[in-house]
Image 1 (cartoon, rainbow, N blue to C red):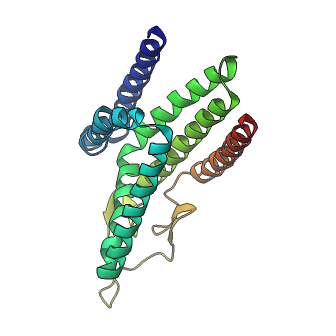
Image 2 (tube, rainbow, N blue to C red):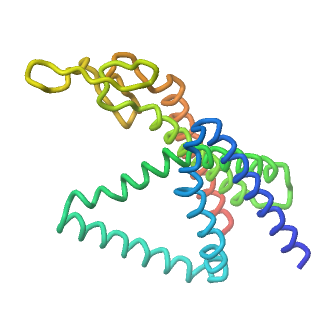
Image 3 (spheres, rainbow, N blue to C red):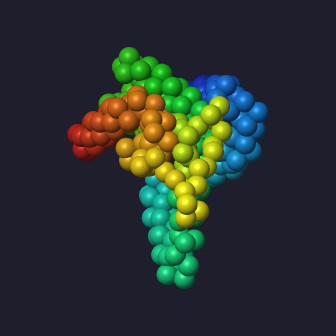
Length: 230
């Protein structure tokens, strides 16, 4: 019981650090706009943590797998039905994920840092299995990857010809259309040259590549450690 209570305290402390650090980073990045992160990202995450995770943890491992497969099947069937009936609505989940990444990257970045610390502590601990260590490293790199991509999305400035004090201004040609600068916008790799110079910082794409490689290595290590455990 004491071990379970200590584990619960550690999880609560990690959640508190993630929440406080994420909101502080959000206010530093967005100013008053960080309230959007609070209501659209943090509140749903807290609801999931309070109501869903306790129920999920109470289910046996086999039951979790079955629930996961059923949830994936229902989600896939729903998206397929949307694509058949109204194709444009099938993009709503993609837009929702993009919105969460844009608003929630400070919280995700803090969670990545917390998970990285936990992973380093597990590496130094002799009582933990290699599988758990690789799993924590995988989560740290995945969260870092999502946070970096979300930050990069905030740097995309669509439809601009030039920027002055970060205010968009449209110039129109003789036909009434917006006169572009010949640039383009890309989501992978992240890039936006519609206004001339790329608005995405130069470190974003290399960092994404490094995190993706580290994630692949960690997942491979987890799979290998799991097979050895059998």
